[in-house]
Image (tube, rainbow, N blue to C red; front, side, top):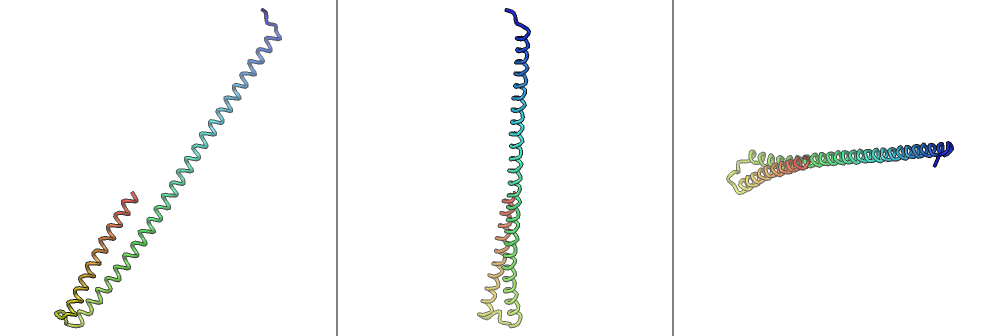
Amino acid sequence: MRITEQQRRNIEFIERLLLIITLIIGIGVSTYKGYEFLTVKTSEAEVAKKQSEALTQESKKRTELVDLMGKSYLAQLEKINEEISKIDEEAKKEPWADTYKGRNLMAIREQKAKDRLQLLQIMGQQMLELKKLSR
């Protein structure tokens, strides 16, 4: 069986056509895979950005909480210190340390001093807990 010149050209044309179609499909698949890759990278970057923003917001809230706690504790400490100072001033003005009123005032002063110490300890523990959480 002999192949004529026209048939040979048709076969070469079909071969070239198949080669071109294969190249077009390869380029299309490659482009799609590149698009998928870039899309995944973009979404990973967006997720990382959102996580970073969430951490920043959490850090800001934690800082605000620490500031609020500090202000609250400071106000309480100042109030206790004022009360202790008032008791000390009263004790200096009148010599009634051995009287019933004097013993009661000294007991109140001692309790206020204990309250102040306890408040400082609680504040320190809570600050340590917040530091542990931030790590």
